[in-house]
Image (tube, rainbow, N blue to C red; front, side):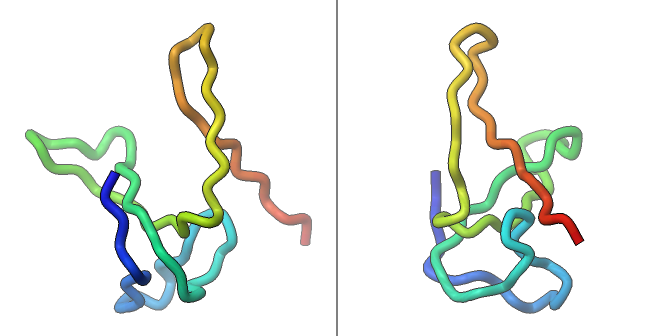
Length: 71
């Protein structure tokens, strides 16, 4: 997985989907399901520190449930 030293902040509303910020820190691009065309797809920036992955052996998938803060 390729990481980047800092978030691309060129689009103000493009925030990490987990913490909802553009805070400083290393990020990784994660492809968006259903957007693949040939070998390209849309992707979203996630802070590496926000990612907390789990592995489900029964379905052979890696996942993270993103819990939204109550407002």
